[in-house]
Image 1 (cartoon, rainbow, N blue to C red):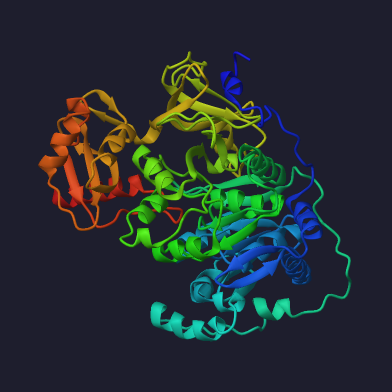
Image 2: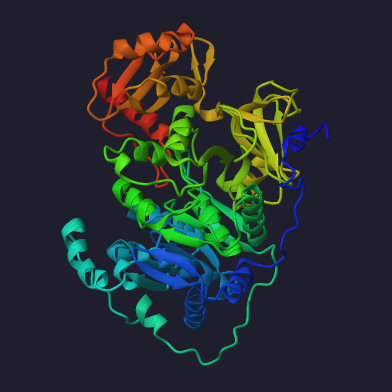
Length: 562
C-alpha cells in the first residue's frame, strides 16, 4: 500500500475500508427509534425526549409539511439554535422528502435574503425571536410558509413559564407570533393527531441531496454545498469507527457545535442517531453553562473547536468543576494549538485530537488517532475509504513525500457539487478529487500537515510566510490566550506580518515582550512587525477566528487614513 502509507498506521480495530448503509438518514432515524424507543435521545436544559418521542414528533412535522405543500426535493430552511426543535425539524424535513437548508440564526436580513433566494427555499422553520427579521425579507423570496417556535416550547416546568421574563430581560424584546394564514406555530403542529399510523417515504435513494450547507463566503458570495444522504451517512459511519472504544448506545455527546455548521450536524446530530447516543444540547456557547453541564450531565464525547477549549481552560473557576467524564474529543474548524491540547487532556483525563475537513467533505477527511499514535502539529491521517495527496500548484501533478503543495481529497463523503454553480464545481472537483485550497505536505508514514490556507499565505519581501507557524509560537507565550496572524498591506514589503492578541485575564504584556519571545523561535522575516491587543477576536458561530475579516478591516482603516 505504498500509495496509501497511512493504512499501515491504523490500529487493528479500525478497518481500512468500511461497509456503509444504503439507507437514507430518515430511514436510519426510524431504525434508531425502533431499536431504542425508551432511551433518552435529547437532553435540553432539564427536558428529556426519548428516541420514540423524537421520531413521532418528526413524523408529525413531516405530515404537516406535506399538507402545506412541501414536495420531494423542496428546500426547507431551518434557522434554529441547538434545541429539540432543531433535531425534529431536520429529520421531519427529510421524512417529508425535502432538502434541509441549515441557516445561521445570526444572519442579517441581507444575508438571509440571499441564502433563501439562492436555495429557493419555500418554507422556513425558525425561532420566534427571528420572526421580525424573516417578515422583512419574506416578500423578496419564495418563502410561502413560516413555522415559528420558542426556546420555552421544550423547556421543563417551571422553566417554560419563567423563560419569557428572562428573554425580555436579556434580549429586551418579546415577540408574539400567531398560528394563522401562512404562519404556523410548532407547538400547535405537535398537538395534531395523525389520521394514519403508517408513513410513506418520498426519498429512497441514498444519492438524493439531504442538505444544502452554505460555505462562509469570506470571498465572494456563499455557495450551497450539496451533500447527499450517502455523504453524511458515510462520514458519520467513519467517525463511529474512528471512535471504536465508544460503547454503542451508552455515550453522551455534548452538543455545543451548532447544527447549522456541518461539523456539529455530523458529529453530534447524525452520529447520535446512528449509534443511539444521547445528545446534551445547549442553545448557545456560554463558558459557565458548559462547565456546569459537563459537571452535572457527565458527557463522554465532546466535539469542539480550539476557541471553545481555550475559553473553558481560561475560566477563573475551572477548578470547581469535575470534567473527568470527558473521554474523547475531536477538534475541528481551526488549528489546535499543542499547548491547549496538552492542558485540556491534563484537566479532563480524556483525549483531545485534531481533525481536518471542509464543508465540502461532510466535513471530516483526516484525524489523529484518539488512542494510538499521534503527531504534534499534524492533522493526522485520512479516514477509512478516504484518499488524499499533495499536488503541485503549477502542474497539478502529485508531489513526493515532505514536499509542500495543495491537499486534494477523494472519498464517499465528498460533496455532489455546488448548488446551481457547475463552473465553480468543475473548478474544485475533478475526477472525484476535491481541491481543498489548503497548503500542506505528507510525511513518510502518511501523516498530513497543514502549512496554511492558500489564500492566507503572506508574501512579504519575496518570502512565503505561513500564519499558522507564527500562531503556534505565540500560543506558547504564557500570557497569550488567543492569537491570529494575518498579512496586511505594506508599501515596502508588499505585505507585512501582523499579530492580533487576546491576553489572559489579569495580565499585561508589551509588544517588545512578544517580539523578544518570537525572535527566539522564528526567522527574522517571520516575526510580526505589528501587534494589536484586543479584548476579543471576531469568530464564526462555531468558534473559528475570522482572519479575513481582520484583513478587510485593516484595508478599510488604511484607506481612510489616506
